[in-house]
Image 1 (cartoon, rainbow, N blue to C red):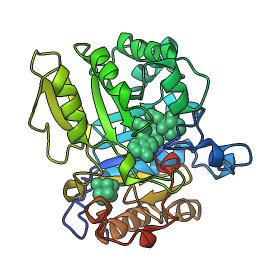
Image 2 (image 1 turned 30 degrees about the vertical axis):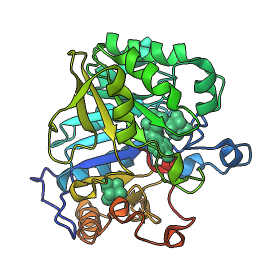
Image 3 (image 1 turned 60 degrees about the horizontal axis):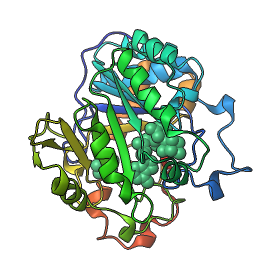
Length: 345
Ligand code: SAM
Ligand code: SF4
Ligand code: SF4
């Protein structure tokens, strides 16, 4: 795409477009109960056929269009992104796009060997977030619903650290009755390590996890649980629109974060757009519909055409699902929300 200064794109509520999440696959080797429950994503589930996936060059072309609209940060996600072939090459291409100054990835770390961690670093990946919801084998197996040792995830984190990734973030989703007993062991384990543990409130994303409000452990409860044993205090955000609320251990043991998607919405600053593995653009994590950009791209649309498509779409954006959650009858959003494994977290 010809180099153009980024054109500022704002939506119907004046929010800019800054942050692009790219899902590179809808497949995963885990079956986390809150994301890809085995009853639905078991044998017979229709994953996207490979020829329907965006090719790497197509992803890069779309990312360039987003960069021209003001996107500065890209996060690679999935499904499990490390399953995607030639991922490092994709990262290298995205890292070289003018205007993109941060590229990160969220992974379950099951493929984060020493060699891959170094290759990702060499490709230009700046930051890694690893998802880990428990430290004991039994709970970990129950949450992820696979036979996979926790020690290998911890090894993956260490491999990333040794490859030079700093301030690795650890995402832990806490669901009542499933793993709230993991909160303190996780906090103790990562305290003082330089890795930043972030607790994510269990969300009603997608339609297959059978979400119930009373299964959400609120950030307020999580803060109280940790504070009782390891005193923490709030810290101001790094920048406007930061998703995780930052807290620090009073004893200088580092930071811990809380993502309050359910109990305290942050739609007002939401600058995130998502691209699915098949080329659907979603302007909200809880969207019921995406906008297809793959067909126009494959039909020969010019860069300018693609830019106009994105700007028109973003200009009309009125999403604020989390703000409205609870005010709208449940059946309005009933069973059509896009699955997390299609658009990433
Ligand atoms: N497979 C990778 C991983 O797990 O890190 C990347 C994709 S995963 C969909 C991205 C993030 O979404 C993970 O941190 C996961 O824990 C989170 N997630 C998935 N379903 C969720 C839910 N229902 N509520 C809150 N977070 C969820
Ligand atoms: Fe896979 Fe990540 Fe979803 Fe777990 S959260 S099933 S690791 S995509
Ligand atoms: Fe953004 Fe939608 Fe989440 Fe609100 S609910 S913060 S608009 S993704």
